[in-house]
Amino acid sequence: MDRDGLLALFRYNAYANRLLLDQAGRLSEAELDCPASPSYDSVRRLLLHMFRSERFFLDCCTGAGPGATDFATLADLRPAWEALAEEAQAYLTGLEAATLDEMRSMTVAGQTLRFPVWQMLIQACVHATHHRGELSVVMTALGHPLPTLDIILQFAGESGQPWPQG
Image (tube, rainbow, N blue to C red):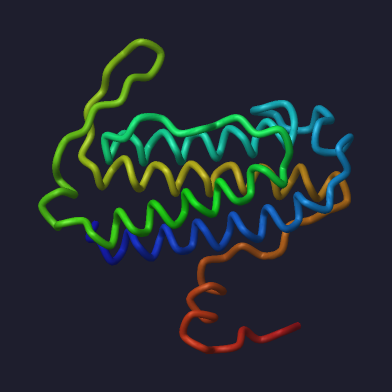
């Protein structure tokens, strides 16, 4: 995986997260907190898990200390997630090719594991994609379906090509 491929994945991740947050913003407080998610109980808790995971993997790659990961409202989460997306894209833009293969440590459940930077960065995006799929099902059941999140729609938009309607 090269830097440009990772940048494309992170641009998509930010794009899909914005669409997700747009739709989540339409949920009532009760809908955000009702038991609906098989993995993290509620939409709110799953969104927080997604943000915290992206923060965690970027911090593992950069060596930065953990940033804030608790938010009182969904409105508080959105600017933090946008800032995280900008931080990730700035990190990737300045990344030297050799750094992608450098090993970084992460500690999970008391166990320290080591992976190359590129694998941790891919994990951040793939993990988010998994949970957006879960949220698509959950939010549809709550009456707030997500728009189509296919990466090709973002590629079409970036290249100035309108996606066929209908």
